[in-house]
Length: 188
Image 1 (spheres, rainbow, N blue to C red):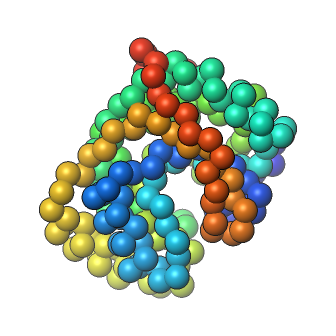
Image 2 (image 1 turned 180 degrees about the horizontal axis):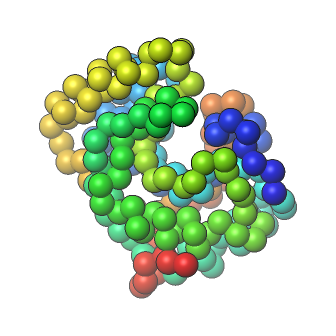
């Protein structure tokens, strides 16, 4: 399986994400467009990072469906604004729900959707990436100030995930939504 050489989404790639509901999702979208003008975000936490498929998208959805059927809903509580040191990606960490996200990732990252990325899976919510050199520190501080002022809950329920397709650089299209109705947490 081919790796993503730069850690970003590949054109014509696929991913599995859990969208973050409003008002938290709207705040994160607004924060991201403030930090990176011109982007078109839809706040989410990634379960399967962008990947090329070894089969047709339909086969990937058929592979994922029974595995996701055993996954239970869970809560995610967001933590602090941080920066990945190598890539300068600014993100918000996951303070609660990380074991469940890792468990889902480990359960699902196989078969026709298996993909090896250059970085280990690290649950987070991206708020800025592909930044001009030398700007991450200042933008991260700005994000920390705005995040500290957010007046609503920093938690959300993951009770469904969406299989998405990258069709034009940063443009993603939802292909299918899967409810999480299982009785046991996803672990492998």
